[in-house]
Image 1 (cartoon, rainbow, N blue to C red):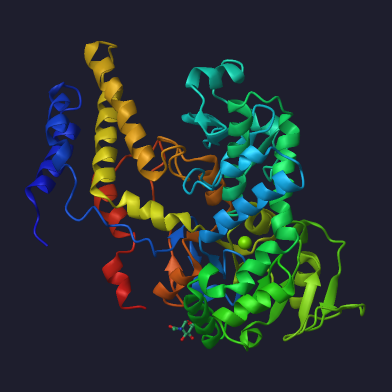
Image 2 (image 1 turned 30 degrees about the vertical axis):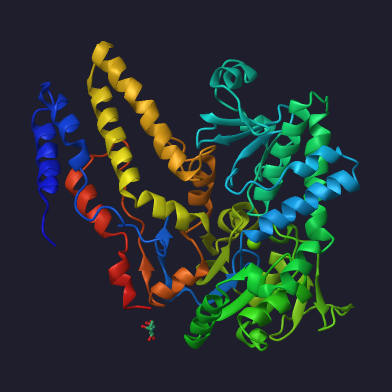
Length: 510
Ligand SMILES: *[C@@H]1O[C@H](CO)[C@@H](O)[C@H](O)[C@H]1NC(C)=O
Ligand SMILES: [Mg+2]
């Protein structure tokens, strides 16, 4: 394409800044050029269907592909969230005798985001960054934001949350919980709605009990099988992109890859869903099917043996000395799985949507390669691709750059500083008005992002992204400079961008 004048403005700006760093000349140009700073084509650059790499991995070396089921092979529509919300709300009212007035609360789509932390004793839902700081402006009690000063006061004069004392590795600690699965969106919204009701009606309540009741009501929806029934009754409505799941599995098998499934869901439910997506012979594609596996304990606990299960769901007592293709197994543990299959190390790639239950132990203890399914990537990338977001980000970068260089705390400093916060808030609100992006606090990665990078080799919006890559494709993470390394402007501007897959380049593979 043609080079628009704004690109020349941008490159000359960088040259000016490089040469004249010691003077004040650089103070003016960026403010002039902000609207024109975007290189051509920078918007819509990122592909929501791309796979992003944290670690180098060559698919050619992967012989065995493993999958979780819910939200990995089966993507569910958001309709499920309001069903879960309404049903759990009614359980609270009818079985736990919560006030009838709660019935006026409906599910609020887009209220919460995944990865938030909840301080049980303070009834505080908040977003925490990679350094364990609350992102100010993202702490909510009930449905209302808590002013920054109050949050700081609650934690003894700091925004730092002592997660190591208050939470545990899987985010299930005594006083602070982390909401990590996609089913937890209705849970957080219900928690906030009930808290809102109690606060606005001045009802005194025990915060710990409230948390437990709500989490029990939500669990009932799963465990008592209500959710399974809705999905089974109307697959078309609840299960999305089944044909793409079929295409992914079929393609892998055609390239002589072995497939297995490890899910916490019961066989009858998985079987119906897979028949819907893949067809009645879906089990021919899989070498191993393990249901009700009780992850993450499956990965850490050696004691639970595999049990063989027949089509009707009856369990057999024979000792399992080999895992056979075409059979269904229940429970078990990874140690036996590795011993019986010999599928060890980096020839195995396992996909799951839950960073802790699916991926953490595999990465930290067992050395399989891991792929994280993060459906939020799709919407977040679409937002990052908008001109509005790009402008806001460029403006923030320019402001931050200037603030860094101004050594005196004068008028200009306060003026620039006063522009920074509104701009950061604007970008945050583009993602979600309450909590912003799941990946970033204003400038830092979120706690969720840090864990995502730690526990996954690659991450993507859905497994269908695999269809965009050759079966022997090698993923290389983009080289991003560490803080002490040279910024390498041109490298970042050009090669950095070029290495993210473009929509056009990928079209022909599929
Ligand atoms: C992938 O690599 C293997 C081994 O090098 C080769 O046999 C196979 O044909 C390749 N597959 C494709 C689709 O390129
Ligand atoms: Mg799952």
